[in-house]
Amino acid sequence: MEHRLDEILSRIEELPTLPAVSRRILELMADENASNREISRLVENDQSLALKIMKIANSAFFGSITKITSLEQAMIRLGMNEVRSIVLAVSVYDFFSNYESGVFNRKRFWKHGIVCSHAAKYLGTYYGTGNDTLFVSGLVHDMGKAVLDEYFHDEFLSIINYLELKRCTFSEAEKIVIGTTHSRIAARLLSQWKFPDNIIQQIMYHHEPWDDKNYEKGSIIIYLADIITRAAGYYCHGDEEEIDLKVFSKSEQAGYINRSGFKLDYGTLEKFADHIRGSIAEEADDMMRFFD
Image 1 (tube, rainbow, N blue to C red):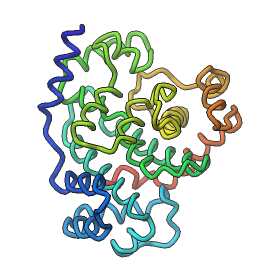
Image 2: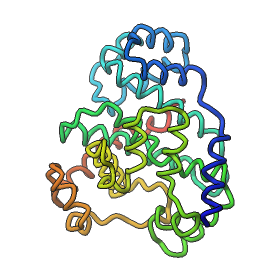
Image 3: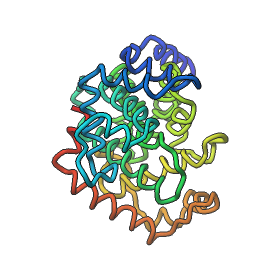
Image 4: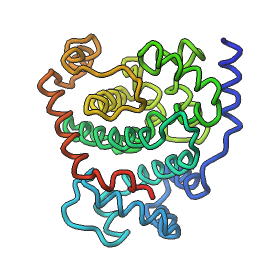
């Protein structure tokens, strides 16, 4: 199994890169001397990207009340850091959106990611963490599953078969079949694409935030957003283990979240899930067209 794991990780290095505009955005994010105007010009020159930013800015996910009619308005309302985050999210979505294996329901997969991105934004505001990378981390936290489906399909089929047989978590099935998880595979690819460290860490530890020694609060938010998303009925795969919030509220994991400064009990968890269900109902007709 160790040999197979090494082969999978080494083949990730051969995967295609992101589009040029996304790579340039990443370069500017890493450049302390880069100006917001430079990023604005990049976005303005890509009409499709500009329209996607405006569509997302006008969604209930970002608390929009008055309609935004220009890219300039969108950038002012969202802030440049949030615009950068949206550009990265759109890039990853586009990278994986054209492949359909017939085994992994991509519509369900992306709906789970979109709802999780909203849950992460909501939880970040609720708990006052102030992390403007939560949207992109929430959207692409499970992208390792898409990597497996598209580039390691035989291994992915084995994982799905084990999942259907045992009704366990996806990560448990992955560890048994290939010896690693979609979280680590995604982190490896995002590192290769030179994504910011906090996004990489939040995705790597979104099932194990207690192991994140650098960006723990962000990883806790993505972990909790994933739990709430599934509890609200938006699973990534139909055969995943179901979430019982009452049971989770008494778990060691919930206790850890409480000890980390995030007040959490069964009533609060139910409130979160109800909020997500209500918010998504408002976006039901449009949520899968945000990135079109």
